Image (cartoon, rainbow, N blue to C red; front, side, top):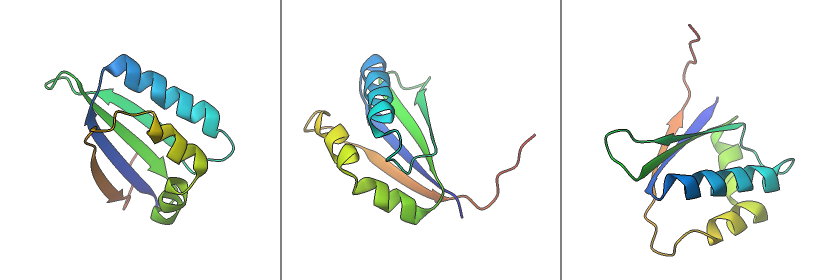
Length: 95
């Protein structure tokens, strides 16, 4: 079953974009992330929402344990509050 993790946090969007692109470059071939969509909340300026797709919840857990993932989050501000939402993909419908 597919799995989506949503991360929501406050950060300058340009920085969030740079950090996300750097992670994907450095993690290429190692990560369990299948795709990442980075969004700027239109109604809440400064709020970034990352929608991260995995093949399974188990892959997301394995991804958290990767050295490249741990190193990537080390560059974030110490007091950054991240809200996580974990979703099982029950059905994906394409128009």
